[in-house]
Length: 485
Image (cartoon, rainbow, N blue to C red; front, side):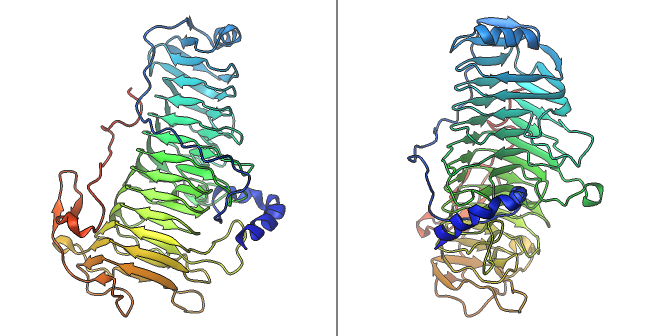
């Protein structure tokens, strides 16, 4: 049925394609995708060559060198400042590096596009200007291209009404990589990084070991739109949200990302989000549209009243081994882990039914809405979910007696509790009330011993209980993330 709805909706989707920056939907089957070829598991930094085939000192000389270059040639751009750069790298297999990483500055109205295949771009800093293309300062259009060890720092237009991205994987690009880069100080409308989709084909991009920081929303009264479209990362659009991208986002550090409710906006299927750290942000990792995504082993240290952990919409998702602490929001769309309500007849930009979702081995500490059922308060409750081996611990050191679960209601006042839940081996302790009744047999309101490790994470002392998240690496600015300058 969902496939039929998707195909019918796709025929009319272009009428509202502008919804692709903050609305959503999803589906389980992918259509016309290639075989599921895995994304590379290598997350090591780029081994920059110690010598270069050519060193050039102007953009025009770089363009001339590219014309004569062969695959594998290393071209270095001399240290210095280059303004109003409009560069299209179309030669396959070339390697473009800064003579000294971090000492090549791209300023003014500038953009670099990687339109060939098998290209590496390394060591550039974008500052004191803004992107020449609304899709970004860096546009990855070809296949197997890598952007590594680069920085984009406060590269903002004075006109915050204009929606500028900083980095785009263009529609037809596959197997792109963005790694060990630092993106800081974005303060204009538009998602920072976007994986675009205009077909149902798989993409297999890899986004890893980057820093996303100081992403600030400008108040709605100062711009023509609300905060929608201020994500740090968006993968897909509503129009093609029912197909699979197979993009992996891992080992990234998100700090002080306050653009909107969706720090990450997932709008396609079969994507993986793992080993990331989210700290002091006001949004959530949001599975907005698309199915069968994996959210595993992420660390959320929120400690504010506007952030949250993971927001789940649509079906087939797996939410495992995540650690979430300090989600103090009481918003109807936020919480530690939110299983959304759905609309009765959703458009592609709507809220599709939560079903067949697995929430297991997660730890939620000192959060006001540790689990939130029926978030966003639409028509219908989540349909089915397996809730197993989770730990919720509140009121540590008198930090607050909060219900473990918030069950929202729809406009008719109906509870939006999960229609068909399965509970097994969950331990919730430290609050007076579960949040609904009766207490399912798979929820134990019993204290178990916890250990606090060196990076501030609580975990269950007796690992044989198989409850909560394992010990995770908490990334920070001193970890192996971001550029090396």
